[in-house]
Image 1 (tube, rainbow, N blue to C red):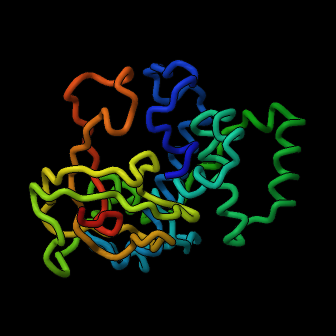
Image 2: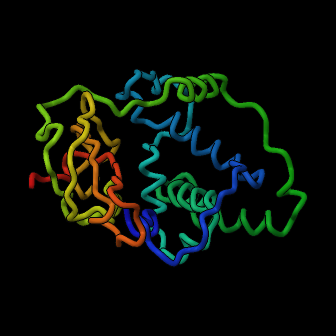
Length: 248
């Protein structure tokens, strides 16, 4: 993950926000719902686990959308914008940009509609249209209940075993990565090899995408951060895809 998406113990940042209310503004619930519906209607679900008959769902959304796409949009933001915007504002920007890139709406149409709503508070507060296909609702509910598992059969034996020492590779993150940037170059001990293999739903420039083993690694805190910031003999655990690791 890039800097703004993975703080990794950086000093001098603002205090952690301990806000416990999941949705602070009503519109945030709607953004969450839009993202959930997009995942539930994504065209890749025809090949997912469990099986979804997504081709039979009467939806006009025909694109590929996952958590990875949402995170990639956040990682691609300018760091100043990332820290300036609220959590669901980042989601809104990523989703809006995706709909433009996929051709569902143009930038001009979005700008015009935004200006119209900002100029007329009554329109902005008006209820959304009701209705919609029952099959779409059923698909979204099924997805919420059953999800979309990344677990797959193991294509070949894992390269590493419990007790092995491994080093995290220093790879370029490209547009998107699932490697915490602050761990690059550090060594750790394998404490768990997860059963099976795990896929990432689209290939990235740094090597994930196909099913592969995932390991739980134990890092010594004092090797990553200054001793003044850690407790003595403390361990830091992280789950890492195999492609990011090499033998020591």
